Structures are given as structure tokens and as C-alpha cells.
Amino acid sequence: MAMTLRLTDEETEALRLRAEHEGTSMQEVARAAVREYIERASSRELLDRVLDEQLPRYAEALRRLGE
Image (cartoon, rainbow, N blue to C red; front, side, top):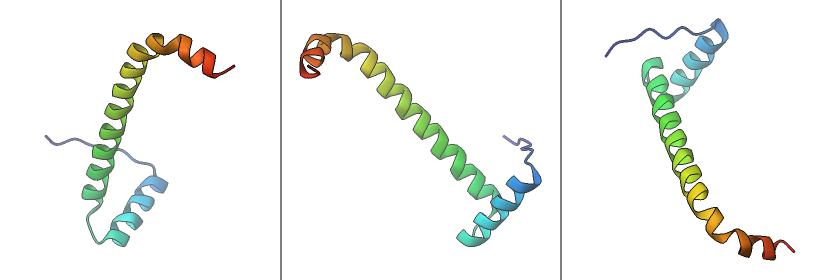
């Protein structure tokens, strides 16, 4: 699917420089950044869910350890 991404002049220049440094296209650098963001956000959401489910189970032990 095609989409339009609007960047500031500064963002465009930073993207251009990064692509040049990596020897790849601006599009590939942007796509890699999107993939990395999605992976990080998904991992963070999974961790939050596990903590929400498991922390109450160990709340008393954690409280005692903190004393």
C-alpha cells in the first residue's frame, strides 16, 4: 500500500543523511524505523499486560522485600 509521509525539512535532511550513511534509500530507512517502532511498542504492551496480571500475585512478597 502506498502512503504519503510528510516530514519537516529537518526530518527530511536527517533521513537523507542516514540513508546516505547506510548506503540505502530514504524509503528503506523509514520502513526500518516503522518496523522497529512497531516491534518495540508490541513488546512493551506484552510486558505491561504480563506485569498487570502477575504483579498482584506477588504484591505481598514484593512489599516484604522492600522493607
